[in-house]
Length: 105
Image (cartoon, rainbow, N blue to C red; front, side, top):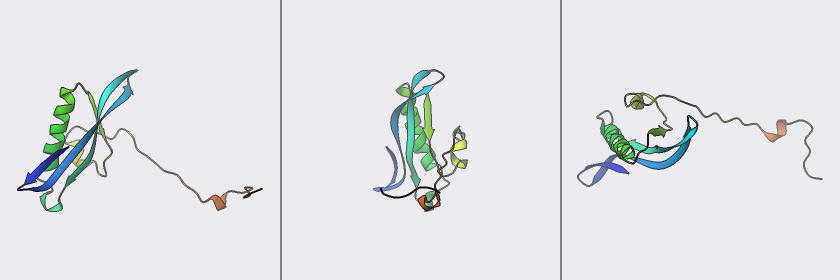
């Protein structure tokens, strides 16, 4: 985890977790970026970008050629080279809408 401090207060932070992923037919090391946060009054100043950049430099030093994150927004990460690669969709329904299914014996 990388934190940006003002005095003794954390004003921005980011963390990473090591993963392995199959890519191009072979297993590669990967850094999973998570917990990227900045206090609202400090947003837009590049503090979280600085924290993520430090994590990516560490990942590169460990030989991890890939990095992924699941973000709530894309704009700040595109400037760092991230791009949308996949989306997650959840589907659900009420069990009472299924026809012909009875409960119990």
